[in-house]
Every structure is written in structure tokens, then in C-alpha cells.
Image (cartoon, rainbow, N blue to C red; front, top):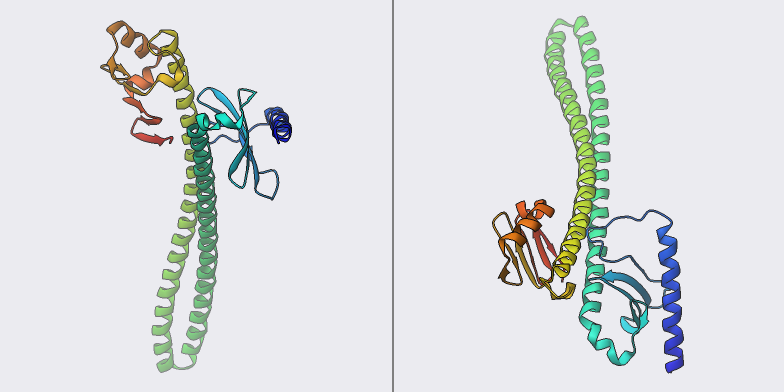
Amino acid sequence: MKTNYLRSALLLIAATALTTVANAQKPGKKTAFNSYNNYDTFDGKGRERIQTNWKGKTYQMELMNNKLVALAVDGEIIPSTKWNEYSAAIAAIREQIRKDRIQAKKDQAQAKRDQEQAGRDQQQAKRDQEQAARDQQHAKVEQDEAERDQQQAKRDQEQAAKDQQQAKRDQEQASRDQEQAKRDQEQARLDQIQAKKDQERAAEDQRVLKQMTNDLVADHIIPNEDALHELSFNGEELIVNGKKQPDNVFKKYSEKYPRFAKGNTSYENGKRQFNGLHIHRN
């Protein structure tokens, strides 16, 4: 049993290493959180392989029917007797992956609905234009009949006037429908641009926070990255783990991280707030 476990773990590390190299050779799609490199289910029998960078460590794991069967951290194979020490990190990684998958499906569904609505608006505009053309033709027929009979012509002219008014309303409606379809398409394009900006900004915030955490470690304010439990940073003060930092430290970090200082940034137990944007990482 131990031999099979070691063989499975070694195959996992080799496979994920090859996947990482392959992915590095082509551009990857950014996500709202760049906390992990990749993950995938590589067979249809309940076996799942995950590789991720989480809080400065590289995790490689293999699960069978949602149960952990192999684990490596920073390239070191972890025996099953020590898996409980990593249960919190593993649970957080899997929860983040689950949330990202759900969000991706929601974004795709919304984009599809927007496209379908734009298509329906265009079809309606076409039908309205065709109806307007038919109404105009009908008005012409009735005007011709009015010439043969004055009484009938009067009634036909009145009807023609009504038809012309309806045709005008139909044309106006068709124009509004076309404008709406155009606005819907433009809004869909702007939504995609904004979504990309939000993803890039989230990734940049995460990168800067990691850099700032490294600086706190380098300045001996915290012993290591995992020791950062609470941070409050604004234009007036810098508080790390409940302790207000001296003015020289506050000035140094304000100059190096002005956006965090001006944006009233806070970090607590894996949850960040930046410029009113709440990012939850359980």
C-alpha cells in the first residue's frame, strides 16, 4: 500500500510539473483571483488533480471521489499521517476553485443571455419594418379605391390616414428597437471590458498585497507571511495585527504603496476590502 501511494504521488508531481511547463508556453486566462496556477479533472471516474500556489506555497494534490489520496507541498511528498495539518489550506483551495467555477458559469450565462436578447431585438426591428412596409402598401391601395367612389374615398382616405399614422408609429418603433439593440450590444461590450479590468485590478491588488507582506517580513514587523492576521492602512495610520506602526514606518509604506494608503485598505483573516470592493477568500 505504501509503495502504491508513493508511486501515485510521484506520478502526480511529474504530471503537474509537465502541465505547468505546457501552460507557461501559452498565454493563460486571468481570473478574479490568481491564487492558483491550474486544476483539472483528468479522467471521468471521479479522480481530480489540483496544482496551486496558496499563501506562498505550492500545493499538488490528487483526490478520488472527493477524498485526498496524495499530497505534496513545495515538491515534498506529505505522508497521510500529516494531511490533517494541511486540511484548512486544502479546504480553502477547493472552495476558491468551486467559487471561480460558479462565477465563470454565471458570466458565460449572462453573456449568452445578452447576445440572445440583442438577436431578438434585431428580429423585432426587422418585423416592425416589414409591418410598416405592408401598412404603407395597404394605404396606397385604399387611396386608389377612393378615386372610384367619393364616399368610399372619404372613408378610405380616413383609413389611409390612420394607416399612415400607424406606419409612422411602426417606423418609429422600429427605429427605437434598432437603437435599443445597438445599446444592448454596446453594453455587452462594455461589460466584457469592465469584467476584464476588474480581473486585472484584483490580480494587481493581490500582487501588491503579497509584496507589501514580504516587506513587513523583511522589516521584522511580522515573522512570516502567515503571521499577518489583520492590517488597516489609510491616509492617517498603518496598523498591523492590531499594533499601530511608528510614523517612519507609516511614511515609508505610504510612499511605496500610495494606492493602498489612499484607498483605505483593510485585510483581516483572509478577507480584503479595497476602495469599497469586498473580496472574500475563505
